[in-house]
Length: 353
Image 1: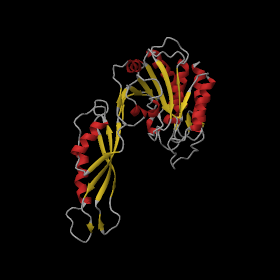
Image 2: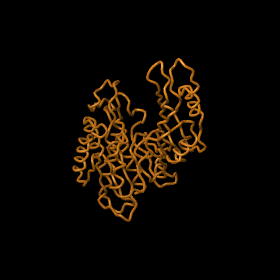
Image 3: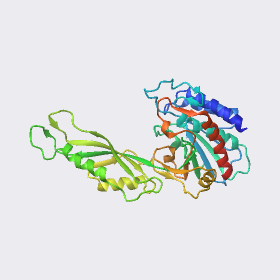
Image 4: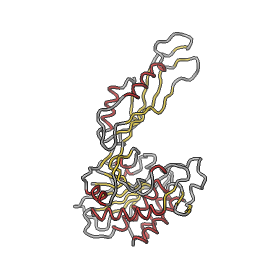
């Protein structure tokens, strides 16, 4: 059965690559996923462009394990030399947009779900969600499904990790900050020029360190990523606008970071765009982590954001492919990575189910 699942998963991956599915435009890839599940006689439901299913012998008295990955993609960059919407298999590689991020993970998890779908007497229920809008952190992605699917106790989020376990992931806050001053003609003295005042503000952000450092994710990282002020050469503006990117470890909630920066930063205002993309983690003593360690997997902390940020339950990020290939030109995944990914997912779950 595993050999057939591997073949069918790769066929699905090729179809997904050749079907445009930018964030919020995943309706056609959702149909392909539905058709694959129909082929295996697995009942499913759909909410917007999210496709989800539960195992045949679901038992509400048991804890529930979520298998999740996404079928949306970013737009292809201009450095592609191959057609991003053509599944091109060359030697050991399968090229195409979304092949690595996160098509290989998605089809591997779908195949894994199919493997366990009909099995009886599992320790966990299984819920599969092929989600939309992950790349854009949109309103109709996994976050919108949490009130619809059964309550989740633990999750595997499929992202390319070389099949090593990301046991923690940094959260994200983006702040719009303002440094105010006095507008004036450039020809006149102005001791309250906000552009000059911004120099010390930038230095504050460069030097500022939060006290709690994670053993897995390291410190919270603050980075000023945008700055904007002024509209003409002979006028001092009334304010300078900054954008601050903050990557949050699991030692802090996003709301704690907001409160701290609004209290301490030297900006006249600093306002978060959203607070919902929290850091996530799973205890190292969790059965899922222990099972992975028994299979020879390693653990690490991930600096990149995924749908884990939507979850409040323990979760591990795990999948075939390499994160460094994501969003790159001529994106690819090794065919064998998908085949081995399915085998490894199954072995992992056999240890806990």
